[in-house]
Length: 294
Image 1 (tube, rainbow, N blue to C red):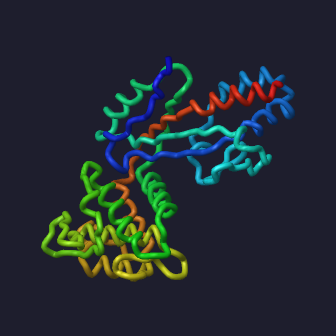
Image 2: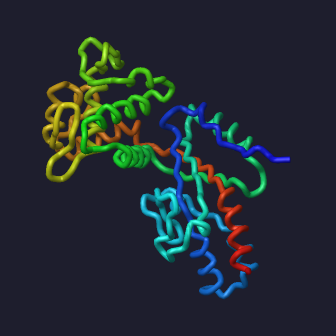
Image 3: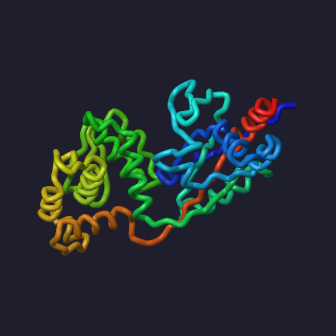
């Protein structure tokens, strides 16, 4: 009898509250460390490696360090020891941002997880600012900054993050432009192939686009064109956005700090919950051990 593989069902979670990470680990590197460097017998090394729990930083970091590595190739080789694909195992990690919208769903999900050692659950304390910049970094890595379509993609991501329960797929389908509208009050409206945002939403979209694309020399590209920080702040001041947010600072970098705090939804702490899928690691470990011991 074949047991149906358990799959994480994340469909009920608000978009933007869940981030998925995947990284590879080289078991040849690990066995080399335990047998050659630590002098353990293969069986003892297998038992120790089986209990091995990678840190959240190892599984989700922007840069993978040995024995971890990232690759999009179909048949990658370990960049550290050149081991072939059969020596590699995959860790899939799901990050859930704690809060009223997700806590009940997260507890329900964790309760359904298979027992034993197939999954591991970890909790890390962070703050809203760090979560925002992690989200921005993910956007920067997933959009193509060489064209203009990414401006609409970032606007889509911004509105989805702001209102996780909203179904925006149809709103952005075949959309050609995004414009501000004085008629709207903290909302949006689609008309034909154009999306209209209230002035506040439009300004916040510009800020996020600036943060995603800014460079030290040329500023950031936005729906309003390429803007330096000074030009962006001047635009926000003349539009009344800074006054509306109670930002009275004069130094441009102090203003930027306040803008980031506003977009991050405050400066408080938040709990990040990680569900680590160890199944591929355990399965490949058993296979590799049999090969290694022989």
